[in-house]
Length: 194
Image (cartoon, rainbow, N blue to C red; front, top):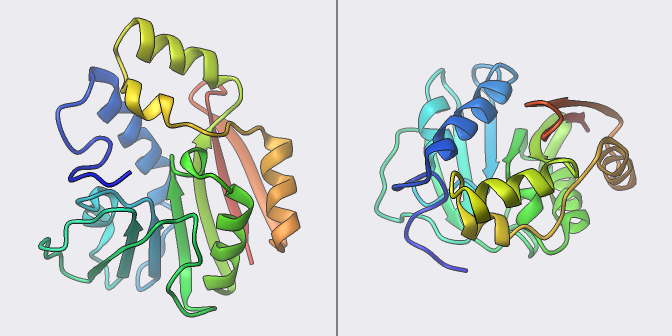
């Protein structure tokens, strides 16, 4: 679905930006200076990349629709469907981030294999995605309370637990996978090394 703004880039229900900022804080501390970073599902205006692009980082963002007129220093945006082979060279990124993105993809296994392919040896995947425990809570907060985006929740195709994420990571070849739940078991955080 093409759009001219991403989730959390416009007037959103009250909890959206709070939850988004908590995800960012969870991830940003793992991104070293001078890293070449790819953010999958970066959003139309590359909100996360605009926050981390300093410190000599070379940043790339990829999403189904991106703002081609947006100019951010050290940021390149690529319009691409993440369900298809990434138009990127193998072994070219130090860090790949995927924040609240995997649950929207039709084939998360394929996306993870593409992430593995584009990471350099020793490269790191930093991923957040809602847990299976979050599904009824998110549906209640969106459909009944209108505190989070109903469109985003309706677009969720998958929910994950520690076992399923570790299994997917190992299947595509990640050697070290660290998982933790956060936000009262509502979210998964994964740090996986190639």
